Every structure is written in C-alpha cells, then in structure tokens.
Length: 74
Image 1 (cartoon, rainbow, N blue to C red):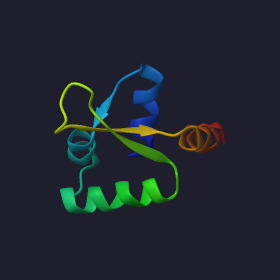
Image 2: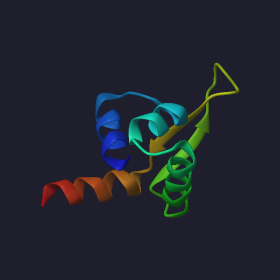
Image 3: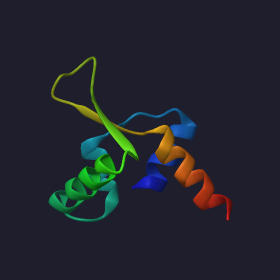
Image 4: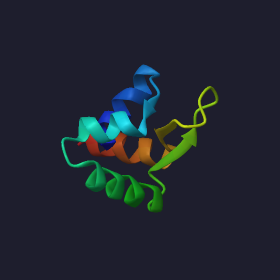
C-alpha cells in the first residue's frame, strides 16, 4: 500500500480508499485494518472528496513520504 501511495504521490494522482483496498490484493476488511494502522502511525491521511462526500481519498503524509524515500534509497 505504501509503495502504491508513494508512486501515486509522485505522479500527482489521488487514490480513493476503495481503489487502494482493491489494489492491495487482500480482502477489504484486511486492507481497511492496514489503512487504520498506517493512520495511527501518521504515515497516511484520509480526506473526504470535495466533489463527492461519499468518497474518501488516502494520501501519504510527509512522514510517510520520507519513510518510503529512505526505504527505497537503500
């Protein structure tokens, strides 16, 4: 998930929670638990869509971006 969000941030793409769950390759309930864990560690944020109140986006925080940058730099 973090790699997907990292690449999406570099490309300037917004990722919906549902898309992230689907792309993770795990059941939705598991993916949502992972997202919650990432939220608790301040690696991602969830934001409501400005155009559709039913949609939520997931974005890397600066902490998450820095973490992934360091991890991939090794």
